[in-house]
Image (cartoon, rainbow, N blue to C red):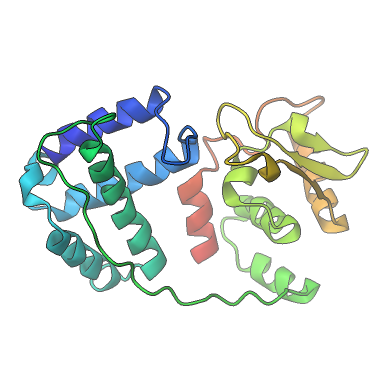
Length: 231
């Protein structure tokens, strides 16, 4: 069944399985896959018990139309969800990995994705956006995203030990929760005056010599951050 295959693949990924680039799957990638398959199982009439032979490119295309139509999802999200299912089929068809018999990769052309507005934002625009954010607890992470240009996963897994107030910089490095895709991904991100003010307020609220993540996973994860941004 699809549910059984996904469970096997998920376990394989969590136990150190490597993708086509030869790197392990990050926690954020596995979160994204879990979200995709939750949506996929909800769409399938048979849910997790759907047989593998029942999944074809036509089924994926129908699911994608459902996401962008009835569910009003963006083409970007629909593409990512479909790619997660395609990744499972690629794994199953690989003799050195899943080694499922008579399984072939699912081919499907991606939807065209509209280019977003990537203009540089001035201070007044950023302030207007943050003023609309509710609840207020999401203003700090969204402010840091806009001020630093960090990826959402870099921010979500930012640790206090990666915050260098003396140099007014964030040190983006790989660790067990978020391995770097390439060595060049590790870098130093300077703080603006606004970012410094935000991180100082967070540190004061966290108490003396805080440890762990700047934003605890219980209060900030991939979905709460995306939800805050969409709002």
